[in-house]
Image (cartoon, rainbow, N blue to C red):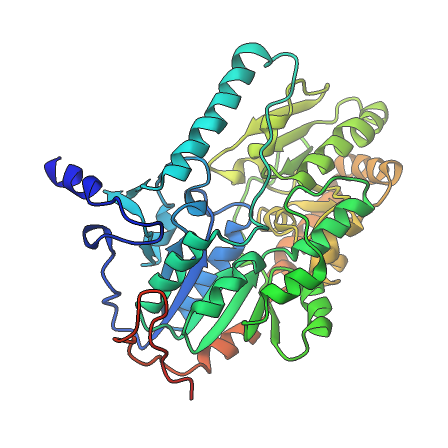
Length: 455
């Protein structure tokens, strides 16, 4: 305990500085290649939402023989909760986590930035006030997604310093908003992982007459954030195609999600399933499903059942008849199988809808809107039933729930063909072709380390 208190007393340094006691050791992995991924998000829940693509990238890097370092923004990385316990999936892949201005206790990291604690206090106060005085009158407070904002200067400096402390074959910024940090990184090859192109996401929301659920930025600004990148890696094949026209001097590669088909129960009562994390696109899709589609389904098929799975279920306070909210569950196979129909009625979206692949991995048939399918640029169209109006969606869902042979045929086609439909090896070829890194620089100031040769 005295050691911890001594460390805390020594931590009164300018933002971005890391006291010696808190610094992480340089990687000791003897792999000739190392990838550093710069993030400004929490790492606790990394296997749902955008975490699926982060791990698709990590798995690709590991398969190509890379050691993987994760460098977290000291302030933004914690969000508004000053304690983080990274998902076990990181250690299972031997990822090293470097978190400046944090105190590591066991497998957990504690924020040492006062800004994080202040943000936690303000958020907690709002949630407590809602729970005590407005729980039955108003919806749960929503907090703006800040992933579309570049790191604050102190976070920017800390991220660059941590990256430059090790020899990286490739430095990868997660999201375009992290791209500006690459200007102060001295790695030989620089890349950006784009789960979403924020400017295109904002356009999609406005087209659906919705307010964007993140910081809205113009395309020109976002393209500027990518100027230091040699490589852009996309969750969406359609967005890769679009930005390759805007930035023809860069390499653009689509990274499909990893596919792991599992055996799920194939029998039981037919039911529809909606899986989702909490973001604006899922909220609108679920509202559309419950308010406009589901009443038509129940009118035609009174016995129809719908399961809502994932944290999006927290937004459903009074489920209509036939709807069951399961929330987050550990084992998704219990809602999978050929008896289930996976639903994706998105009206606003960007990136790629991960739930489509999840449904197919679980052996379901899939009913989706054109908007939900956009990110796959036609690759999944032959496997799903497509519907774009409430009437068309409800009619197709009633048929899928009622026609056992039709539903099973589609489900089998999905599970058998999904892996081949989105298999791509371009990123692996690119990574395998990168040269091993040089030794890290040993001279230079903390704010501007000496540059390595880029020859």
